[in-house]
Length: 457
Ligand code: UDP
Image (tube, rainbow, N blue to C red):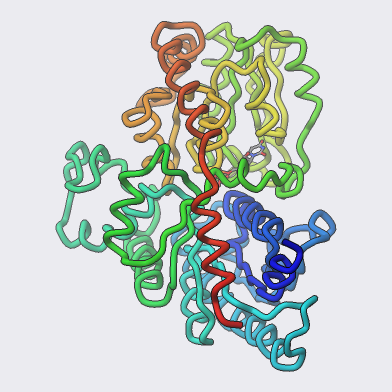
């Protein structure tokens, strides 16, 4: 075993995350997993949203010295343009940093402590880095931090665009139960920029990647994974749910400091009595919708824990959380708790949580599935519409808040999911899904480790 481990540590894997919370988290979870299986790991990263090396003493961290334009770092920027600009800005610095690591191999030879670069694992949205690694002759695996279903929609996007689908409620052939309206969407975004971005992501996988790693598991996405395998003829490793498989503590991967005080508050609440509300790290809502959310929560009569983070309200303050509506705090004094950032995984695992009002980011969706918590879905952009459709129409573990966010509709939806019969049925199915998730095997991880360890260095 020790010999096998030493042999593997000669294999160094270079990781490169997209610098946003929902992408950094699964990449660092994968890093922990690869290291725990005996591989050496270097994380190349941007200075923007950089991970904290002190929290991962077992990993090597190397900044790439990028110069990001304002449109990448400025909150509220057009997301498609932001991702295109980020790719352009990171391409050369990433290539230089990876080339330096390869030179190190030349100088150090078979130095076992350092390990020689065997392959790179690059966030699939970083198409420029995927291409750059391949051009340097490094086998590159694209990490999909979204679902297999979302990845399928990205692969299909150029075809769908050419076919000119316009009817919003039409089912998309070969992507059912997704409707046109569920496809990756960024309202208000430049449609050409979005299509251009998705085409580049799909193109880089097809032309440069040696394989794909997806943060999902067969128990929920076997048909989607099978179709991707048929379509790409590449190894596809379904290594999720990464937060369970890696056993990396949540506080290791978070970019913000959570308010742990809410756990003590949850301790005082009866089982399944509290609604947890969070729209993740990036999604925003308009001022009017924010007020309707607040008054809907108040009107529901249900206790809640709500993450109101700085920047949640579009166009508001970026450094401070938005002010709550007048009179709201008084109204919910004994029934609600508001934090700027929650220890989400611990919250979802808490017995007091009855349901999760979520934007359906893929990490949040997986975390909820793994704790058997039913969901109220309010997808905002990107892959969230795809995830929401699977939550409501494939796994049956959630329902929509409503087409519009209005206090009466909100209060009704909250009551339905928390205390209604529909909610009880969703909770039962969520419990079964939790069992599936905890039974997810490490077979795919074993074959990923075997694949990397067999690469020449
Ligand atoms: N998260 C958290 N505390 C919060 C809100 C979110 O720890 O108050 C974590 C959550 O557990 C998840 C990640 O942030 O792992 C958000 O990722 P997701 O893919 O759900 O959404 P995104 O932020 O990328 O839209």
